[in-house]
Length: 115
Length: 116
Image (cartoon, rainbow over all chains, first blue to last red):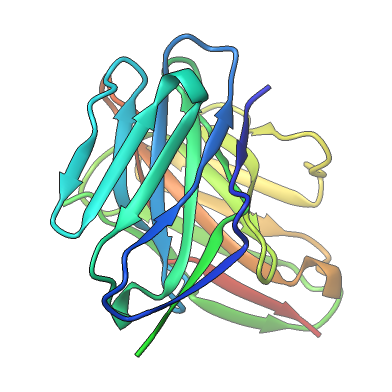
């Protein structure tokens, strides 16, 4: 069975601070995908990143970066120089690489950026 | 590209009525569509997986007779909440998987259902 744990329920930081959102996963699959999604107050999920389990390279996209550590089953997400528009709920998710590929979501972290 | 729409975006109905929610992939063919439910301040829980032309696969604990899923074409899946009750009030989100080797799922904007 697959499981995703986001231990941080809510985080508040002051604008321009850096913030890291933690994600720990469990799976018996050797090949899988990891995802991060942003859900602003409107409710629509915004795709941020997909990572194949074979690719352990960290990734940076503008102010966003992701740290994939297979040894600790973690896929953490860092926002640098946070902005008010970053306020949202962020979900980490896991899927099988083959088969029906359904997504298992973590419980989400509500991030509030204080101006 | 890769846009998924849902209709309606918001619906309010009386207890006992049935509500149909449509999920459409607008610019691609979706081999598989997924239906999720999200209660306030909670995570997305997968309800069922549907493949075009075949019966949906429901997750444990989801009543298939209550949540009817029809995947009539490669661009349309519908979820019908039958005899809705207040406890069915939730945010329903669909996603569509585009064919190909990589698991690419695109999410609809969601439908907020309120049952009075």
